[in-house]
Amino acid sequence: MTSKRQTTCPGCGDRFDAITGPTHAYMTSSPGCYTAFNSLLAAEYGDPALLPTHRLTVDTYAVQHPGDPNARRAVQSVGLHLARLKLQLAHDLPPKETNDVMLGLSKHKSSLIALAPPAQFTQTVADIAPHAGTALHSAKVSQWALTTWQDYAAHHTYISEWIAQTGL
Ligand SMILES: [Zn+2]
Image 1 (tube, rainbow, N blue to C red):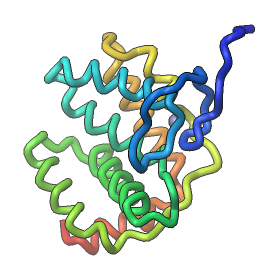
Image 2: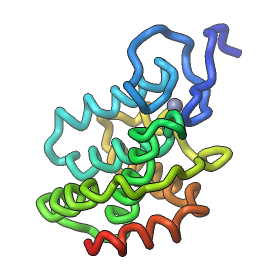
Image 3: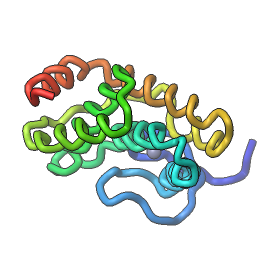
């Protein structure tokens, strides 16, 4: 048993060390969880080969930290990041093309509705952060992205239809 005090993240629901520190403006998380997320980002910024992985990391973390369902920016964030996850998991788009599609999608984000997150997530950033910067980084993030997309199964139809109506 560790004596280190831990708290539950209000976003992903996992346990992290009870530290003080910054969190994101509208992706509600605990400081310990946000620190774990930032350790992944730091490894990705340092390695251009991890650019496609970086997109998955950001989108996956965003949908696990939905924030206030009454806040417009939070609502759009979940829908948009779910749509981005779906596209990345479905197609192996080259970076340029992915960027164009992502920008196109975000123009339509005002039509997104609030999507309730699943009761719990199969994997969280706590499972992935220990592999930051290792040879397993990319594979672990891909697995995390896929299980998170599957955890959101209740909204797959909605997201597919939303993407279809954007014409992209
Ligand atoms: Zn969290």
